Image (cartoon, rainbow, N blue to C red; front, side, top):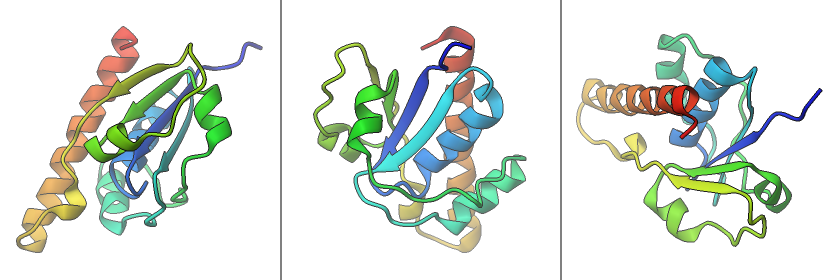
Length: 141
C-alpha cells in the first residue's frame, strides 16, 4: 500500500488550534492522510479545546501536546502553521518538496470575558478550522 501523505500542523503551544486541526483532519481525511501536530513548545492540551471538539463529535482527549520533531518536519508532505508565531519561527525545513502553508487563526486561549464569551471564541475558531480543512480535502489546497 502506498504511504499516505503526511500533514503536520504546527502552532506555538500545540494546545488548541493545531490540536483541533489534527482532530478534524483525522476525522474527515484520516483515510487519505497521515496527520500529526506539534508546537514550538508543548503547553498541554487545552481542556476547552477538548470540550468544543467533543461538541463537534471529535474526541481529542487522548492527544498529547508535543514539541516539533525535526525528523517528522523533514518528511512531512504538508506543513501547515496555524498561528503567526509558529509561521515566523518554524524551524528550517530541509525537505524541498514539502508544501508549506500558513492558515492564521486567532488564539482562543487568549480570549477574555465571561466563560460563555471565551467558549464562543473557541467554537468560532473550531468552526473556522473545520471549514478550512474541508476546503483542503475538497481542493487539495
